[in-house]
Image 1 (cartoon, rainbow, N blue to C red):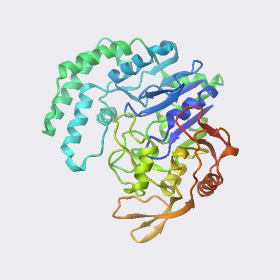
Image 2 (cartoon, rainbow, N blue to C red):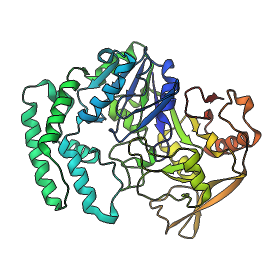
Image 3 (spheres, one colour):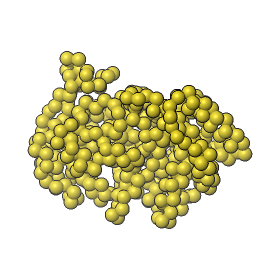
Amino acid sequence: MVDLLLGLQWGDEGKGKIVDVLTKEYDIIARFQGGPNAGHTLEFDGIKHVLHTIPSGIFHKNAINIVGNGVVIDPVIFKKELDNLKKFNINIVSKLLISRKAHLILPTHRLLDAASEASKGKAKIGSTLKGIGPTYMDKTGRNGMRVGDLEFDDWKTKYRALADKHEAMIDFYNVEIEYNLAELESEFCEAVETLKKLTFIDSEEYIFKAQAEGKKILAEGAQGSLLDIDFGTYPFVTSSNTTAAGACTGLGVAPNKIEKVLGIFKAYTTRVGSGPFPTELFDEDGATMGRVGNEFGATTGRPRRCGWLDLVALKYAVQINGVTELMMMKADVLSGFKTIKVCTAYDYKGQKIQHLPYNIESEYVTPIYTELKGWAKDLTKLTTAEELPPALNDYIAFLEEHLQVPIKIVSVGPDRLQTIRR
């Protein structure tokens, strides 16, 4: 049995927290796409933890965590994550398994990312500059290096050929970026030796056997559905399939083996980096959301753009993922707003529509809002659904009616205990 857990907006929905909350119900947590541009934040026992590549179930002793073939791994960042976990006495070798088919991010991938972004000027897409895009380009171009290559003696020869090719491409961009490749390569090779101490697996076979044995598997996505390379707000997207289909290709799971699709969204909307954002606020309401919600990227530290909930985009994400259950995060951030707005339609080129069109840039799209009554109650100390204020229950009912999917969890704070099941 495989359940999927996905973000339904532009990422940063709170997937890490929910995986952490749900892990005790699963035997295996498997990450299926993305790279260290992800920042999954978990908070418990008064401590905040940020994971970038390692699945969010790593703090639970009974769960096996798998980094799937659809993920791209930067050994340097991965080593830092492992170093941060040392104080928790986790048996990493037995609890963290790496797919041999996962691709490696090389130092020159990061440099290529920086050169490409610098060359775009004002048209830049807002890359995290982690080398994710160039790594996926090499993957689809059939040039990439994979984790399994590290088990063979000629991996450094492969590395050199690819790095030399990248340097020629960097020269082509004709932009000024400062770097010391020898220093970066030394750090990379040291990190590779740490990576080689971990357990490499043929993950699709491992997961197939786990299913046959009746194990419960939770597939964990990174980023969000509106950043999907095919279905997101292209070109302001990531380089992988962040939607449900990505779990099939990123883990080798057959579509008919998927049971629940758990979709996570914020009670409002945020976006990091460039790209269209119809409900973005530039007023005090938006500033309040950002301040109260502590809206800063876990990976980049960049402030997130904030706006009202976009139900048109959310319904689109629910449809393309086949979401069966919803989880609403950060309901506590909206406490204190007298009126809460929800975008229920777009004015698209003068026509009212309720689906996501090809282009949602601001010159074509104006959000049409429905206003709902807000609530003043502090939610952060609540522990049961019965304690939720009536106006919040009305908000939830309104969303469920439009989305036709039940909201099963309402998060009222960052800690794993601040999670209300309905």
